[in-house]
Amino acid sequence: TSGDCPSYRVGATTTCDFSNTGLTEESKNMISEVVWGIGGYPTDMAIIDAYYSFVYMNGSYSYNNNPVKWTGYVSLMHPSDYGYATSGGSTQDRTSCVKHYLSDWHNYSYKDCPGNDWLNNNSLQWTMMPISKNSDNAIYLNSG
Image (cartoon, rainbow, N blue to C red; front, side):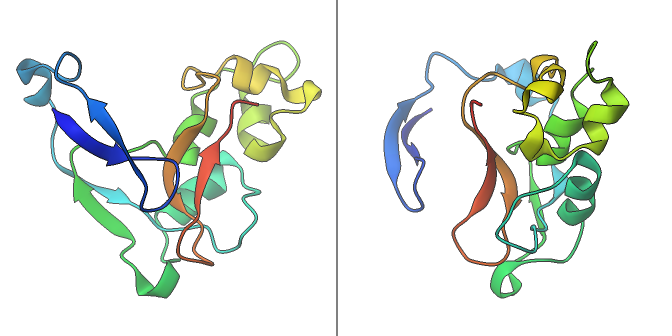
């Protein structure tokens, strides 16, 4: 319920207190333990669309032969979750958004993609997808 939580830098922590928030016991009983794909992206450039993000998540790329599967109850989202959560809009429909690089969604011509994505909260969000070329990078979504 409280203690030290991971911060934005590898190995860094910050004090956190969830004693008045979080999941109820009823909610906790609705969550099953599952196997999550945590395969990584094979280069240091995170230029990826929702489909290939999903492919790499379930793939075998990892830094130093780290595991590509993790078993747990709750995890961070994956870039493919974010990509597939858009409904698109008048300038770009959902199909066009899903097929386009997530890194280009900040361009004006793709504003409907993040603007109509129910996982977009306009803040930095870490994902569970590592960049497998090195030991300390993961793909994140920035507020832009």
